[in-house]
Image 1 (cartoon, one colour):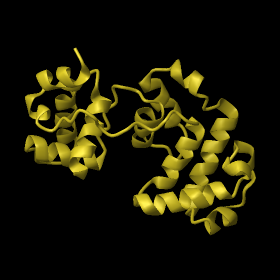
Image 2: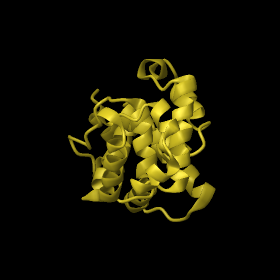
Image 3: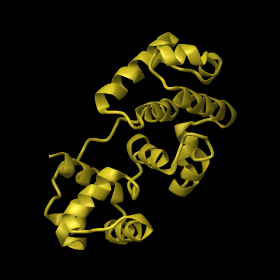
Length: 197
């Protein structure tokens, strides 16, 4: 059974919004750079994030922020590119982690989603949500549900007629998403796309 067919049978309410072609997945690139860009994008509009990411990459030869160069870069230089002091610290933390432990796609591919989240959230500045986005969009993991994503919460409130906030509301979202296994990433992308239109 194809994923869309499976999901339509598993969740008739979800079936109303499923489209044949959900949001495209990012090409599999450099996990380390994807993580840096994810941090730079936090709490910014798409346009502002793109501008700052471009300025940040322009600071490095071949637009590649090697861990060694990023660790040596002065906070003032990063600030001049539009990177906040706090994010500059987080970027440095990622560079230190990458230099010590690596963020190699092949090594990460051998780990479970939970193991990857546990590893990445050791880095100050990388939270659960950031790790989930990396799993979904960079590592293309098929069964990730980002329960704390505000866009998903809004879409699910609307689609399922939900109310509330906090831990109880979050548990309700997770319970609904259980029906979507093993395609929760696909459903998240469909919900984001549906909300955007």
